[in-house]
Length: 167
Image 1 (cartoon, helix red, strand yellow):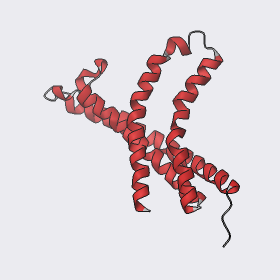
Image 2 (cartoon, rainbow, N blue to C red):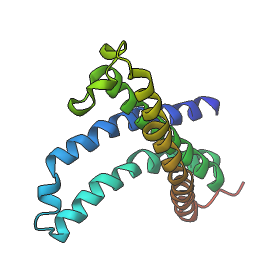
Image 3 (cartoon, one colour):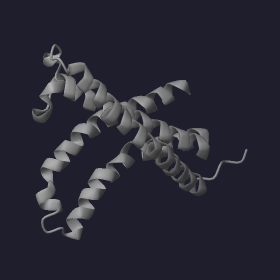
């Protein structure tokens, strides 16, 4: 049992890191000129599904797998919210790694090569408090509530249509 929970967390970590770069790709694919220029509802809906709906990809299979094994809606909900929480933390830590080691054109002051600059550590303290920890704190609430709801609903549907076997 313990091993599958570690796997759930690892899936969340990998998903969070991939999603960080996926959103950049999605923005390049359908940036503001596509979304806000003529604002066709169909494109916006597609963008919304690709942006938000992607978060269902790791948790639905996890919720269903956990429900199948444990026959518990609660464990399925906890598995889903744990996966999303791990993904949120990994997402924002990937952001920090990108800023520190890869770099961004508009944020060169945060790259590790500038570690001897006079404001380097103050800039990083501000980014960590505001962007990284602030983002984690803001979105972890969504991960807990949303993950629990999605996991509970997925398990409820599965368990409703697959009743337990009587012995």
